[in-house]
Image 1 (cartoon, one colour):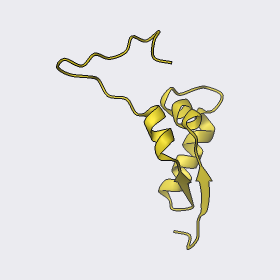
Image 2 (image 1 turned 180 degrees about the vertical axis):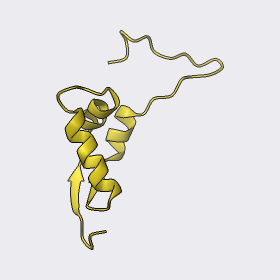
Image 3 (image 1 turned 60 degrees about the horizontal axis):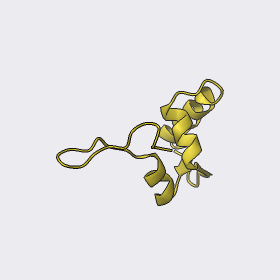
Image 4 (image 1 turned 90 degrees about the vertical axis):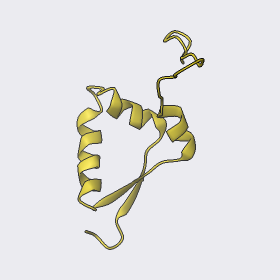
Length: 71
């Protein structure tokens, strides 16, 4: 583990690229995740990015947005 690892900021678009396994970005994202797991870098993000990416299915009376409305 590096004493002061480089901090890399990820915006929502990078997280989405990783989750959606976008061909043009996936290898780069996975490489950075591997570096972070080894303690070589730190991946930073904001609460706003987390809110833009995180989704759960609604239960009970709540209704999930239709895919065409969820943009």
